[in-house]
View 1: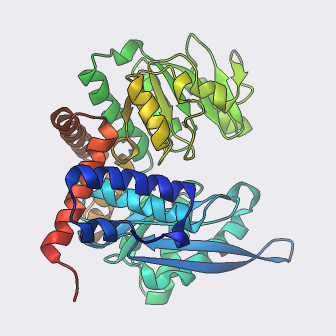
View 2 (view 1 turned 60 degrees about the vertical axis):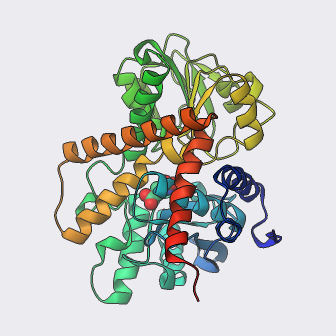
Length: 420
Ligand code: GLU
C-alpha cells in the first residue's frame, strides 16, 4: 500500500483501519481495496472573508468526493476549528459506506471550512459561505455533488449555498443542496431526521437485546440538531434522560431531566449549564455515567482507549460521526456493550436528504407522516440487515455495517471496471 501522507490525520488513519479490517473479511480484490483508501478528488480552497471589523480573514475550505460509483456524491459541510483535509476525507469515506448501507444512489462526499462559527456574526458567516461556495462551485450540482448541513451549519447556510449556486446558473436550482428551509424546497422532517432516525435504530437495538426503553436511563452528549432531537423524542417515549451536555459542559439528574424545561432553558441562555434542579458535570464525567443508553452526538473521537473501560452503558448509539476510536471499539466489545455504529445510527439525516432531493427533482412534496414512516422503514430494514450480518459472520455491528456498505461500493467498482 502506498503512503497516504496528504490525508494523514488521526480521523483518516481510523477510517483506513476500519476499511482495511472490512476489506480483509470481504477478501476484496487488491485494486478495489487500494482505490477505496483514496478519495476520487479533493479540493482545498482559500476563503478570504471580509470581517465586520474591516479586516479580511482567510479561512481554509475543503470539499472531497470519495467515489461516484453508485451515483452523485452526497455529504455535509461542517464549520469547526478542527476541520482539515484528513478529517474531511475520512468523513467523505464514511459517507460512502453510509449511503451504500442505506441503499441510497450516492457516493460519499464531505466538505468543511476551518473556522469557529460561534465567534462569527451572521453577516461574516454569509460572506464566508458564499465565497466558499464560489470556490467549490465546479464540484457541486444536483446530479454531481449535493451538500447538506453538518456540525456548525444549518438551513440558513444551505439557503446561502443554494442562492450562490443559483446566481451562477441564472435560475433557481433547489436540488443542489438538501437540508434547505421548507420555503425553498426543503423537506418536512429533514431537520429532525438524524435524531429521529437514531431513535428508530434504537428501538431495534432495544428490541434485539430485550431492553425496555421506557424504563431506560439515557445519556446524551451534544444537545444540537441530533442530540437535542433524540433526547426530546426519547423523553416523550418515557425514557429517563438523566444526563445531557453541550460544548460548555453537562447537567445531570439521576431521576431524569425534564427535557421540555431544558429546551426552554437552552433557548433562554444558549447552553444546558445552570439548569435548575440538576447537578453540573463535565463532558468526560457525562460519558461515564451509569445508564442503559449512551448517545454520543457531538464531535468525533470522544470514546477512546482512555475512557472506554469506564463506559457503563449497555448500548452506545452513535449520533456523531466517528465518536469511537477503533481501540475503544475493541474495549467496548470486550465489555459486551452494543455499539450501534454511526453509519447506521445517524443515517436518518442523509436518508431524508435523499427524500428531499427526490421531492425537489419531481417538484412533488410529501407529507411529514409519509417522510417519517419511510424513514422508519429504511432505518429498521438497515438495522435488521446489519444485525443478521453480525450474527452470520460473528462480530460487532460496526464491522457488519462496514462490510455491507463497503461490499456494495466494491460491487459497483467490479461491475463498472476501471477506466481506461
Ligand atoms: N451531515 C449528515 C451526515 O453526516 C447528513 C449528510 C447529508 O444529508 O447529505 O450524515
